[in-house]
Amino acid sequence: MAISKKQGIAIGAAVAAVVVVAGGITAAVLLNQDDDAAEAAAAEETTEANVTTDEIEWVRLDEPVEEAVAALEASGFEPVEDGKLTVAHSSYLPPLGYIPEGETLPAGTEPNIGALIADALGLEYNPVEVAWADWPLGIQSGKYDLITSNVTVTEERKELYDFASYRVDLLGFAVQADSEIDSIEEAADVSGLKIQVGSGTNQEQVLLAWNEELEEAGEEPAELVYYDDNAAATLALQSGRIDATFGPNATAAWSAAETGDTKIVGLIPGGWPLTANIAAATAKDNGLIEPVQIALQAIIDGGEYAEVLDFWGLESEAVTESVVNPEGLPKS
Figure (tube, helix red, strand yellow):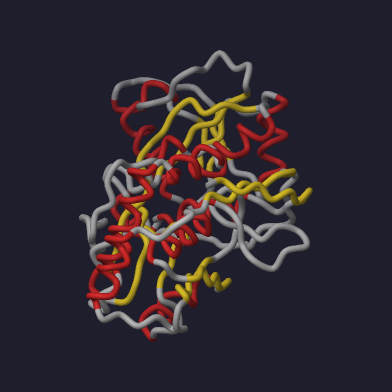
């Protein structure tokens, strides 16, 4: 069931977070993940946001999913608060998660997915806003039952947490809406282009690798351009000083849908060259992850999941199956 909540909000400043990559593509693949890429790269590029949303749509379930409830009862898992699912979220920017002006609770894809999981399990959704650095200990210690906040599955994290996947992490190339550029998928497509990218991010490492490929082939490399904030990069794209921006698909897709000034012309895996899975996470072996996976699969099959991603413009990151502890990005 879709519930529309009119808010008339203006999104303010993002939380600053910078991902520092130790050098080389391998390090970038390992360090620049969901949290480190989609959220941190978006935040580091943005000092002010001018997105306005007049209506937020929350998709919820009318009734619990019997199979998920039965699995939860059989698991022996005991929530932090009886009858509630306490879900941790870190808020940055739409569409993943943010706190609308005048509100105290987060909105976006990640909170809505958390709410749907709670609905399916027959529990009350209890969102808690947490700093990104604080969720790992909070999950391990049992302060929070679950986190749905753009967390990438890694082999290192799987030693401490259980995961149920629900999205793939993607990076996106954005250009002006009227640009003649209609596809960027490989090195040859960026030859001679001026592309804005965040310093120290995985997307920068992708472009550097592509430039090496172009230079070895005797072709003109792309010119990487760096800006201190998103407003400057947006102005540069609008004025034609750069040809494209390359960053987290989630924020780029949302901006394109909201303003109509840009379009997405290419998608690259967030864990390039590997696939990065975004997943709900809970403490290792506490019994919760199997019921969560059943809940996620139920909303995927039932269409509620697609409603959420469609509303926030993230159809490209959808999956058809939720997997418990899928293969993660390798350890460094």
